[in-house]
Length: 173
Image (tube, rainbow, N blue to C red):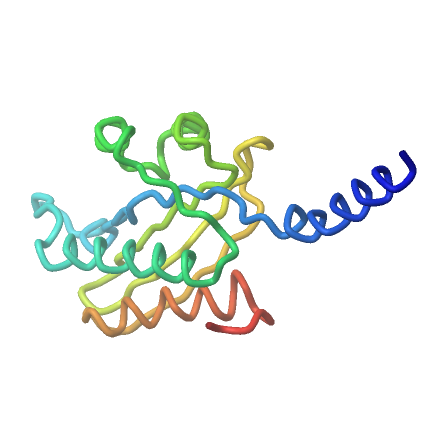
């Protein structure tokens, strides 16, 4: 009887480190563009999102997902079940907390929201916000300004935010 208790206790102690380091479930929402480049231009009609910038939003969303998965810190959940709702409620940064409800639907503990603020054709601010879904609030944020409108510059911003703002001090994989 005592031997069984010792074995059970030892087995439980072996599992504790694994449970303590279990990755949180995370949902990554697509980056949104905030175009302020024509804000002060009088008489101009909004031109809509540039196709190249729309493509770059996908590129940096995929980069953030890849970096999160590779880090082992988060288990990134699939958004297929809520893709239509994400589309309907976009831009996510303006949905007044709907991101928490959407994250809960896919079982996520945290939500990553990304924005790219366009001040001109060459000046952008890339930001990533981490929301704690249970607390319904932003718990961490990182931003980077870039001067250039290329894939390399946008990717550099996301990687800089990941390495130097959100997870500074953690070893890069």
